Length: 332
Ligand code: SF4
Image (tube, rainbow, N blue to C red; front, side, top):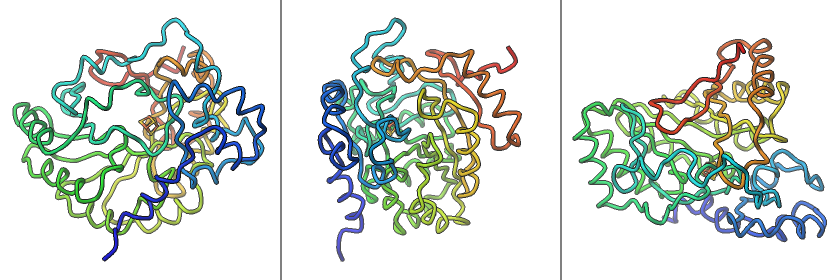
C-alpha cells in the first residue's frame, strides 16, 4: 500500500516559498517583488498551490494574496505591537501545552503550518522549543489528570493536521481515553489551503476517536472556500463532526459588512457555522492589517443588522491574562 498521506504532503513540499515564484505564478511584476520580498526575512513565505489558484492573477491587492504575501509594511515598528501579544510564553504550563483557560487546554502538536499568514499572532512564537513527541504527550496527559477542571483538549499550532495520521490517532485516542475529556477541538487552516488533507482515512480516524470532535477552520474571505474544498466538505456531512469557523478582521481583506456577510453565507452553504471574528492581535509586523475599533464596530453593527443571528460570528478580542476571549461591545 502506498503512503496514504502522499497527495497533501506533495502539495506541502511544492508550496511557493519565495516572492519570485509567487509573482511568476500570479503574473505580478518584478516591481512587486522588489518592493516586498525583504519581508520574507521577518517571516518565511509559504503559500500552497491550491490556495494560490484561488488568487486573482495580476492583482496585487487580491484579498487572498494580501494574507499570505510578504509586504514592506511588516518592517514598521508600531507602538503597542509586540512579538508575544498574548503573553503565551508565560502561559506555557509544560512543553507543548498552553493552559490559558480553566476548562480547556491548548496542545501545540506541530510547530509549522501549511501556510504562513502574515498577520499571525504566533509569527514570532518559538515553535522549535515546543516539539511534541511521546515524552511531551505523556507530560500533557499527566498535566491534564492533575487538573480535573480540564474537560476539553484543543489541538492548535502551528497546524495540528500537519501531523501524520498515525501520530494524530495515537494522540487523539490517548486524550479521549481520559474520563474527564468530553470533546476534542482541532484548530486548522490546512484544509483551506490544501483541501486534499481531508482524506477518507482522516475522516475514519476522527469518527473513531471516542469523543465528539469539533473542527474549527480559519477562513477570512468567501473566496477561500473554493469548489474543491466545498466538494470535499460535502462528503464529510453527517459523520458527526461539528464544523465551525474563525476569522480575523483584516484591513484590505474583509473589512466591510458586505464581505463578512458573503463569508457567513458561503460558510453556511458548505455546512460550517461562523464562530469567532477576532480583532487583530497586536503582533509586530502586522500593524498594517489593523482595523480600528470604531470602524470595526460600525462594520459589525451592519453585519448584525443584515444576517440572522446564527450567521453572526462573535466579535472578540483576546486580552492577555483574561479568563476567556472578551466580546467587543457593539452598542457604543
Ligand atoms: S494557519 Fe493559523 S497559526 Fe498558522 S500561520 Fe496562519 S494564522 Fe498562524
